[in-house]
Image (cartoon, rainbow, N blue to C red; front, side, top):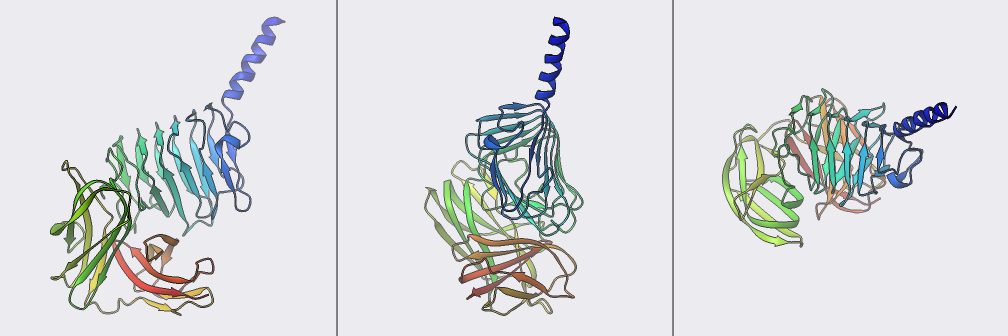
Amino acid sequence: MLLLVAFYFLLSASASEAQDCDLDFPGTTTSNYSTSPGACGSASIGGSVNVGKNTQIGDNDTFTFDSPATINIGGSIQVKAVGSGKIIIPAGVTVNVSGSFQLDDDGGCGGCSFEIEVNGNLNVTGNLQNNLDALTWTGTGTVDVDANFENSSNGCMDCGATCPAFPTGSGCSDSGSGCSIDFCTDGNYGSTTPIPIELAYFDVTSLSNEVLLIWETASEINNDYFTIERSAGGFDFEGIGIVDGSGTTSEYMKYSFRDLNPINGFSYYRLKQTDFDGTSSYSHTLSVGRNLEDTELIVAPNPVSEGRLNLQLPFDNGRGRIEIKDLRGATVFKRAVRLDSNRDLILNLQSVPNGFYVMQILQNGLHFSKPLTIVN
C-alpha cells in the first residue's frame, strides 16, 4: 500500500513538472509571467509557455517575463499572434528555453508588426523560427540561439532603434521573400555586444542637387565617429564621408550629412559607427530615388483631418512596412502591409495625436518618405 501511495505521488510530481504555462489575451491585455495562472510564475517549468493558447495575442497586448530573475522553461515558447503585440524580457531577467521559440500568424496577422524587447537575456537551445510578416527586435540585452535562427518563407524581421546582441549559433537563414533587409547579413546576427548607440532616427531625402542624411541618437557609448556609406545596388558599399561622434552621452544628439554628388536612380545609404577601440556596427539601410519616373508616392488628404489617409503607392506587389515618426524620431504608427500599385491603401490614423510627422514606406530595400500633418 505504501509503495502504491509513493508511486502515485511520484506520478503527480512528474505531471506537475511538465505543466504548461498557457496565456490568453481577451480584449487589450497586459500580463506578467509572475502573476499568470497555471505553471506560470515558477522559476522552472517542465512544459511550454504558450502565448495566445486559446485567445491569441493581438494589437496592444503585452506579455512580460517580469520575475523571477532566472526562468527555466523545459519545453518551448509558442506565440500565436493575430495583431501587433509585444513580449518583454526586462533587464536583470534571464529566460532559458530548452526547446524552441516559434512565432506564428494564427490568422488575421497578415500586416501586423510584432515586437520582442530584450533588455535581459534570452537563451534558446532549439530553433528560433519567425513566421510573422514583421518581427522587430528592440532592447540592449542578448539573444543567444544554439540551433537555427531563421525566418520562414513568409517571415521578415529587423531591429528597431535599439537591438540586442545576437551571438552566432548553428546558423541563420532569412528565406523570407520581399523583406526590406536580410537579417542574417545586415550586421545584427553574429554580434556579441548590443549596438553601442541608440539610433532614434535616421532618414534620407533627395533634394534638387543633393541627398540629405539626418540622424539622431538617444545615447552613445564610446562613439568615435560615423562613416556614411553608399551603394548603387545595395550590396557593395563605399565610404563617402565621416562625421565625428559624441563619445559617451545619454543626451539626444543630432547629426547630418550632405551627399553633393548623388547617384541617379536608386542609391542606398547606411551608417557605420566606430568606437574608440576600432570596433564598429552598422545601421539599417535606407534607399532613395533620383530622377525617376512613375515613382511618386501620393498621400491624401494631407493634412489628415478625419483620421483616414489614402496612399497611392509606387511599388509592385509585395510586402512592405509603413512607419510614421514624429520630429524627434519616435515611431507613433507602424504597420506591415501587402503593397499593390494597382489599388489605394487606406490607413486609420485616429489614434495618432495631432502634429507634424514623417511617413516612411519600405519595401525590398526601397525607402520613400513624405511629410505628414495630422489635424483630427
